[in-house]
Image (cartoon, rainbow, N blue to C red):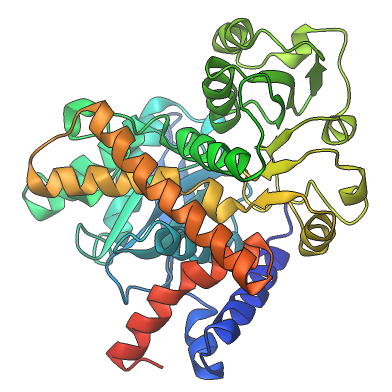
Length: 414
């Protein structure tokens, strides 16, 4: 289980440094270091066996100076207040990096959806929306899917909110199925956004993606999609991992076959005898390393053993601050998480725009607009890091927090 207090304090520390670089005073940091609003709700649910169970849910709205807050809702037994707060701050940064008219939001319910029936999940989803309905909406706070939530859960939540407000509120929530106003390209958006930043990084490093050696830690939603897109571009995915262990083949793994196995069995590495550890996976010789699993994977203990030219953080917080410093000193190009994973919220924004317009775009249009946003974001951060001689993470925070800080100042909040 991640140390969520540490997540909040490290996010606050870099945010403070970024605000200093921008010339803002302590008062601005005091405003931005915590969400403006944090809601905790208790949700009683009738379970299938007739018993009543009470769940705890959260919603953090970090800062709405530039527009509505935006961010996912996760269903997980390890959800904590600190995690939800930190992730809402990260959403502000992602929206700033992608230049979206949003502040960050995040939500979560402490539950284990793997142990719940569909009916119980529906009752919980609807009750959560009823509990927070006064605080959310298409122009105030727009939820989305996250860990263990999906288009079906978004549909129940949208329907509940629509019934409360007596109108079809498609723009209330994103990540919906296409039949309910979802956007084409949304399911691959986070992975595609990460791949676009990897493409831009390889141009800066004069590496060809074709035949480049890629190691991916994690083979979940993001990891498997990233593996598939890079594989189709001609990259050699030499290793992938799950919690059980990692598969390695210096000639490149058969990604299409592994994805088929994943669809059949849910996981893949346990089906093979010849596995290496996650620890060893991170030390493999490769051009591109993609941590797409857990936080705090690259630390001061193993940062000197990393043999990649480029690291793209597809997970939340996979690299500690001390490790970031070491990697930067070693000349490794780190694409920070708030940049690499900004594709999801960008296409969520496109979905919201389409809902508000009542006019829907082709997948090609969505992907073209996403590419434009991600390329701009990467180049802005890379150029700032290069010009100011700071690491990519700090550069991402400087760009990510700038608009929110400026808007807060113009509003007279700090």
